[in-house]
Image: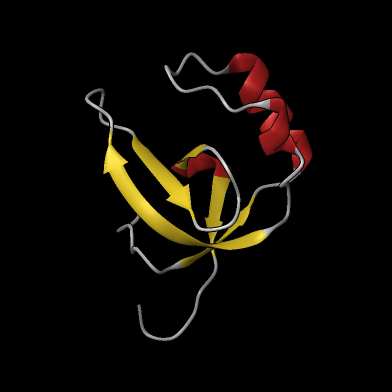
Length: 80
């Protein structure tokens, strides 16, 4: 897991990845059909937390839903 930076920029992974993640995920917070529509979109991390099972969950500023870090790609920007 990369260091999560609130205010950092991320890109939602491609729809094919999200669909597979949605089908195969055993996580407590599955991604929704609405979240599939955000594939490829860039947004800013609004908040983040660690689930009690140890995986990262993120909230984005413009895209709805709770996101698993593995569904996002960090966009390199500045020195963070």
